[in-house]
Amino acid sequence: MFSMNHQKFMEMDELSIRKTPYFFIIDFLCENVEIYLENELDKSGLQIDFQSFSTLKKSNTLNKKIEWKSYPETLESFKAGFDKVQKNIRLGNSYLVNYTRKTQIETNLSLEEIFLHSDAKYKVFYKDFFVFFSPETFVKIIDGKIFTYPMKGTIDASLENAKEILKNDKKEKAEHYTVVDLLRNDLSMVSDEVEVTHFQNIDLIKTQQKNLYAMSSEIVGNIKPEFDGKIGSIMKTLLPAGSILGAPKPKTLEIILDAEGYGRGYYTGVCGWFDGKNVDSCVMIRFIEKENDTLYFKSGGGITHMSKLEDEYQEMKNKIYVPIY
Image (cartoon, rainbow, N blue to C red; front, side, top):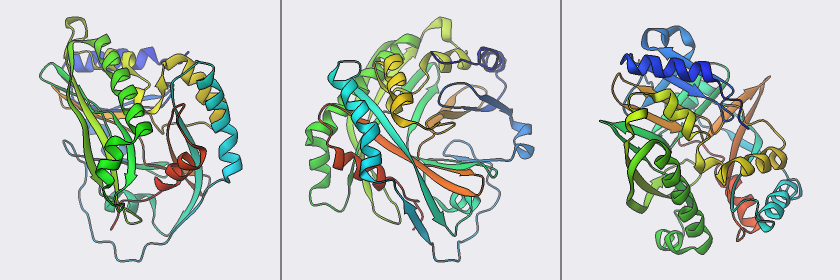
């Protein structure tokens, strides 16, 4: 189903067993796995800014008024893929599908400026190729424990009682339950005693266009002895990330590839830093890619049988922003 890059995952295992720090990037379909030792990052064209690890040397102030235009596809065009997804959900082939789109944008910001001035938990700038500013952790591995924080469900924070509405929205709640369940199952493949330790936390995400509330939970397990120290094997088992795919995974992937009609590439893949002992990794969402000389923003959301076309179209557009303010 996925053309897994076995050699690279084995390399990741070897390095982590030797406790050698490295940074890794894995695309959505696990076709491209890149590994960089700490001393290779300088010449790699990569800039990284995680809470736990950063290559940032300087950050100057942004002295320009931001220009930002997006050209979303029409509702009709969005609906073509949406209908394919809904048909498969009705047939019982999937009960949650993460449907994403590619939107042309224009801005007077360079990819590097977006990287330097965005406010996000995880940021990576890959020279002249892409930049992302992600709020979503994939997994953290700390002292033999593995943590994941599925994030599903967003709402415009300016709405009255937005937090309560989000927590009690039937569709968002169902989507969140599904992803928590999916990731609990995923974690149990590599760890024992898996439990949900926090459920439906509400986080504020600030952006220049509008502030959003997002819903997340925390799931924890103890890494199984056979996966201990093997970061590559853990990633290979868990990927693609459930929160940006859906459930059940293999069939849902088929639906996505048919409905979306474009290559996600590195968007919704994962990247992370292994410091010689622990791992911090994120899902590569909030993603801008340069194709020839055109910029595209990739965004989307989870579709369930309760999803309404107009709402999902709006959510896809809501996520086209930069967190610079």
